[in-house]
Amino acid sequence: EKNMNDALRVLAIVSALCSAYHWYTENVIFLSRINVLENVDTKAVGIKGAKFDGVGIAIGLFLLLLKNSNEQNDKKLHLNKVKCFGMICDLLHALDDTGVWEKMSGQPLNAGQYGMIGFMSSTATLYRVWNG
Image (cartoon, rainbow, N blue to C red; front, side, top):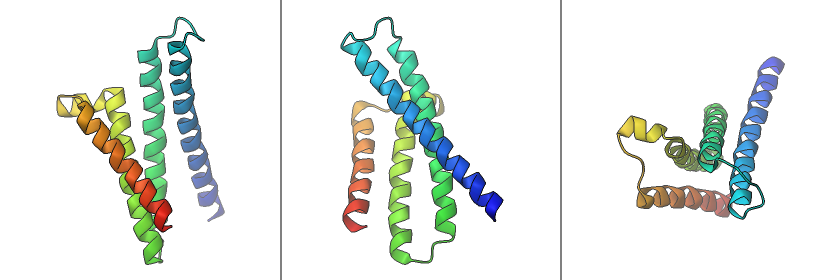
């Protein structure tokens, strides 16, 4: 039991570090666009950040599914399912940002699809916070 909890804690830390790296790359891109940083390949940096984001989200989904398998409280289970939906939306963004979605489907998400998926993710978060 303790070893399992330690392993899950390590996975949660890795997931958080992946997310942090993703946001670091977003800031590098921003700083290069306002000419604070020079000679930054923003496309490569963005793809690398999106890969880390995808890994972090996938780990987070795994941990959430484990948590849901033991949840007895119906309200918490429902809110966790809403969180799972939002995280899947975020994973779709990461897959599109890395080019994986295009390889799987034959075309990237268009701006409308990308925006709608982001809207659904943020709506899921708002719902959870409002009803939590």
